Length: 286
Ligand SMILES: Cc1cc2nc3c(=O)[nH]c(=O)nc-3n(C[C@H](O)[C@H](O)[C@H](O)COP(=O)(O)OP(=O)(O)OC[C@H]3O[C@@H](n4cnc5c(N)ncnc54)[C@H](O)[C@@H]3O)c2cc1C
Image (cartoon, rainbow, N blue to C red; front, side, top):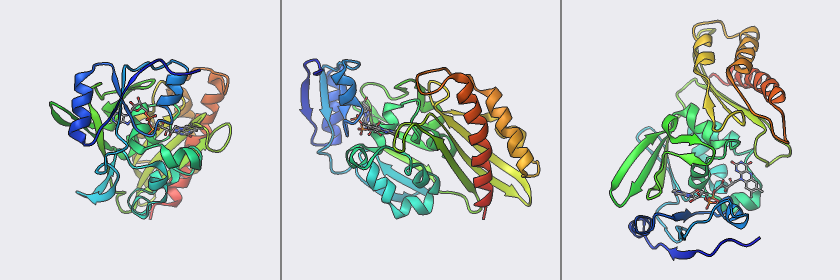
């Protein structure tokens, strides 16, 4: 199929882009086009106007700022995947990229576009939740920052308004001694996750000091599991504890069924992947 007719604006600056978004309430940002164009081709999206941000030179960067990473929204996936700064400051994100898409898609798709697309089976939203990332949004009216916990609202839904452009994602650097785990099952390598568990873990001696757990593929958006996290705190970081956390994860979620996996299989995956991610995280607490 071909997309419905649309107008096209090639933005030359961020101000130009936000002005174009403000002018037309049915306009949408075009970044890498790896999700949006596919949706337009099946007419699941019918924007009046595409505001193409690919000519903007100032939104493609990875730098260290205020004790964390600042990643420009237009940074291509492959750049994030290969970045030495990402490996140093957020090894969890680097590991997630071992699972995200294929090289051809990563060469074109962007970090910001991926997060704005908010696919419920996408890996990066879960990473953003456990790292407590924040999102800098700009419109013609000004700028605001939204915490990851408030950003993802549902299937393809975020807190970004139609007239807002995501310009930067800020990710706090990994605290010294914090371990991380990322475990996924997908139909084929490079496909969206059937289920993935993303974990950070801090120890005090041999006990859990703090754990953060997020799952993707089990709800209409990536979710944290606060009750499972709280149940880990202060307890000896043993395999038995991690197995119990996996069982608690199984009960805490309410996944739906689709042609990839039914709800029972997703609960099984959540349980096993949570245990494995916690075990991997413990081995990296140094
Ligand atoms: C074969 C294939 C396999 C894939 N596998 C995976 C996978 O395993 N995991 C995964 O997470 N993704 C996967 N993807 C999706 C891929 O990561 C896309 O690149 C990504 O979802 C969208 O990024 P984009 O830059 O292409 O955005 P676009 O497609 O251009 O836009 C997506 C949406 O975000 C909005 N948007 C884009 N940028 C901004 C911005 N700066 N501010 C405000 N709104 C914005 C657009 O308006 C649109 O609604 C796959 C895609 C393909 C084709």
